[in-house]
Amino acid sequence: MNLIDTGIDKGLIRFDENRDFITYIYQNKKRNYNNPEEKVQAEIFLTLALIYGY
Image (cartoon, rainbow, N blue to C red; front, top):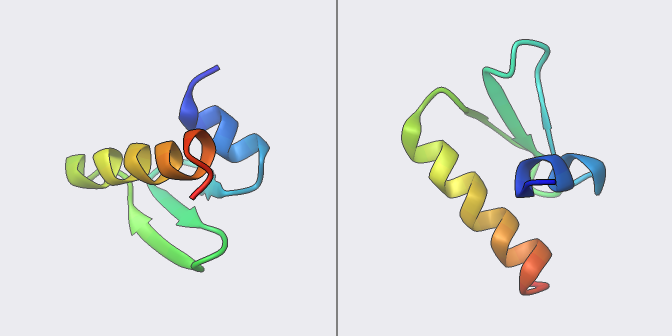
C-alpha cells in the first residue's frame, strides 16, 4: 500500500470523485491534485504524518 492509500484509509486526506482535488482533512484545505507540485506536497505531508508521526 502506498502513502496516498494509507492516508485515505487513516482519514488524513480524501479526493473528489474524479481525483482532481485533494482535501487535507485536519487543515480543511482543498488543493488541485493535477498540479505536479501538489502531488509532491501530498507525499511530503503523508511522509511526515505517517512515517515520522509529525
